[in-house]
Image 1 (spheres, one colour):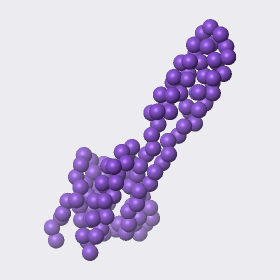
Image 2 (cartoon, rainbow, N blue to C red):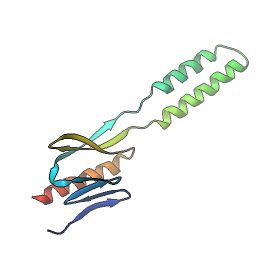
Image 3 (cartoon, rainbow, N blue to C red):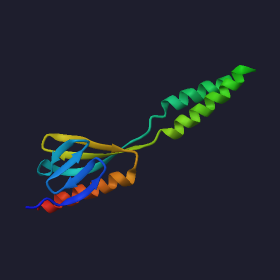
Image 4 (cartoon, rainbow, N blue to C red):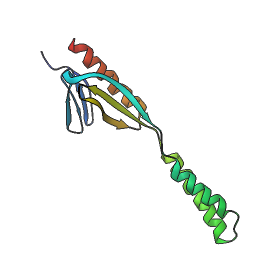
Length: 122
């Protein structure tokens, strides 16, 4: 049977016989199912920085200015932390998080391609 490519973008390739991510190859014959995962952003650091910044606002002079700077940094850290989406492969040896990205649509396209590859195996 000829190898059919369902997805090929950057360092990720999906065919009816294999799934390649960053040089790691998974045999599609071992993949029983595919699902997506979501990891929420870690907001702990930005909350701590914001709390320190709010406390500094009660000071005067350079402490007040440091509070404003801390609040600005907290806002930037909050905005910079994004959800991470992942491709999770189920195989006979268990679950494996094969690919992680901040782009939800990219992960959805990879999962759709993997499902097409599974179906094409018959």
